[in-house]
Length: 195
Image (cartoon, rainbow, N blue to C red; front, side, top):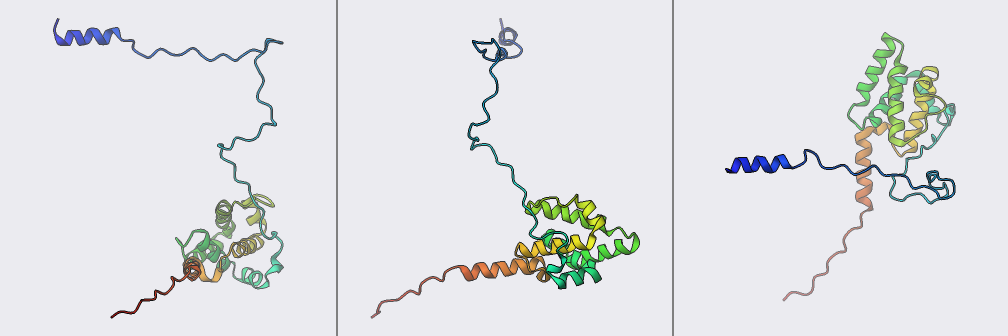
């Protein structure tokens, strides 16, 4: 018998698939001959399981526009500027305030439905800061109370520590300066007397 026929004989004797283990059977209770029930609910949680993120409430309510009169007036007269500042922070500087404001204004002038554009940013912002979807869905909030929603988002970003007029890059630079100022200076080295 040559080498190839020996190899064919060996492979033909092997099973085509590994044997499957029998399916596990549930243990039975001795008293009622029924499968055991699930584990009691009072067991401590498993520390290895990931915990779901809990949503937090907005720092101010939707109708608390009078908390910041300057933002209320800006949003009432020029909502595109308020939206542009929000969009720049939410997009992390990938779009500028000017570009976002221009797109918002163009949609507002052409269709009157700028709320459909701005509600997308509310959803994106809620995802970044784990905010609740309240008092109703993002689309309804912007369609029914566009200016109030923009004011609330602006105040929330201020509450998160952003200076809205600085823009994204200005806030990043500001945080970098604060971090550098917080680092301790190394102690001065005192050299001995050199002859």
